[in-house]
Each structure stands twice: as structure tokens, then as C-alpha cells.
View 1 (cartoon, rainbow, N blue to C red):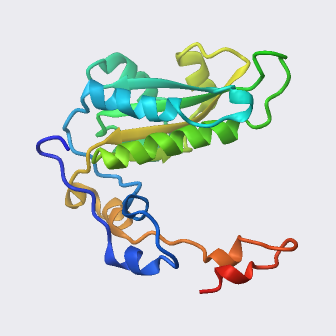
View 2: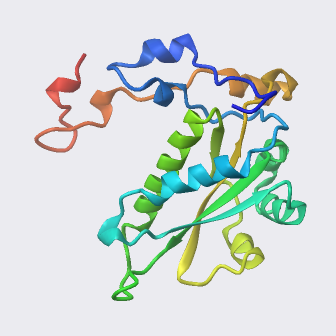
Length: 212
């Protein structure tokens, strides 16, 4: 963990809300809004990309690409920041790294539509996020951005689709956020019970082994 960065916080309410044991890094992952000004070392960023590189994918297509903008290249950072909706700009501007994930929509070998491309890009981001959490970093994924503006700003080809943005950095001090954002930043995460989405035998039939 970089000097001057805060340690990730695992809220007791979240620990208690787990129905079954999971890895502490999964419980502790949070999409916080407060980022430290500490820069992310190039080697650490490269390790996040390496984690994404080893993600499984349909036909080993590896349809993910990432546009990464750090504050060491302020022009690129501001261009990517400018693609976000206004609400996200107010907190993401303080992160040292912004990222845009992009999916290749067709298979290299056949040119046919790859209907699993978004799924595989999501898996790559999950791998990246787990590696980031291990490194003391936070990845806050962002749906609120202008897809076509991002495509234009970064010359993304037509058979590729911007999927999501993300802010990456070390945890900051939530007390420095505006009150509305501070409350959101420190609230426990809520998750549906397993019985709501794990089915057995047919749709809507909760698996017996999910009933703790």
C-alpha cells in the first residue's frame, strides 16, 4: 500500500451479513467515492492489467481492451473525465487513475457476433478489481458516461463498444466529501439473499442449500 493512503475498511455490518464464508477481500471491496491524492505506481497498474489478461473468455477471444488515463498525462485524464456524467465528475476527478473498458463485439476468426463479449469484459474487470483490492486500491466502476463521446475522444472503432468507466486509486478520507456523498460512502453495502437468485429445478425455485 502506498504511503499516505488509508487502509480499506470492512464494516462489521457487512461481515455479519454474509450468509456463508467468503474471502475477506470480497467482503471488504467497496465502491468508495473518496480517493487519496496518492498516485498509483506504474508497476501496480501493470499488475492489475496482468490480472485482467488471465481472465477466461469464450473461445479464448479475450475481447477486452482498456483505455487508461492517469494524472501524469493530464490531457488524457481530462478527456476521459469529460466523458462522465456530471454527478460522477464531482468525485471521480479526485482519483489518480481513470479507466474505460471496451469490448470487441465480433470474433477474430469468423467475424460473427460475440454475444459473450460483455460478459467476458466484466470477468476481466472482476479479476482486475480483486487484484486491486489485494494491492490496497479501490476500483469504483462507472456506468454513467457518454458512450459516443468516449468513442469519438479516443477513436474507438465501430466493431468495439465502450462498456464502462472506472476510477482507481487508494482510499481517501470520506469526511472530506460533501455530506450527501459522505453518507453514501460510509453506508453498509446491501445484497439480496441467495434464495432470491439461486434456483434449482426451475425458475423461481430457491435451491434448498441456500437456506441458511
